[in-house]
Length: 197
Image 1 (cartoon, rainbow, N blue to C red):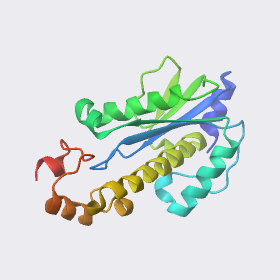
Image 2: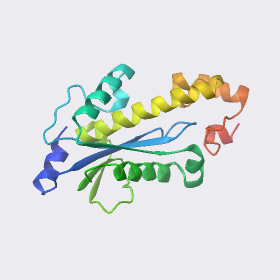
Image 3: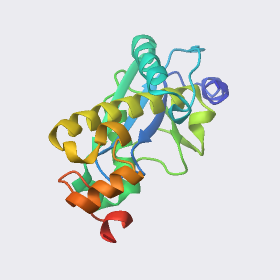
């Protein structure tokens, strides 16, 4: 899981940030990205793609990442801007925002996926990077836990939709709530499941 980081170190880069996002496939809420710079040869037991972890495991790992990381940045783009830009551009903007939050600044970026955010920092896109890079896996956990907390908060404002359970993703329960109550202020109205209804 540290091979990409080691290759960057061998090229002379010192502060390598892993970047990932959460919430691209949701029907409601923001897309959230995280950028994480870990110490050289960092080891975090059990760290992998956040989708393969339980909420409790993610929460424990998020605390450990926050305590050992050199720097952690988070960026978020809300549903209105997602509709204006499209979800890919919104995710890339959230990633760029997360990178801007990092102090010290990274000198190389490892980005999950096949597209790169707009920055002036050298970067590499890694499809399925959250399974291949420790830094990206760390970013994946921070992005997911941050977004989940936001969706639980939204549940207090919009209790009819069950956001605390499904976090805005298109479950049967969520689709049924949309059919019954219509879209809320945080729904992405341009997304197919909503634009069809």
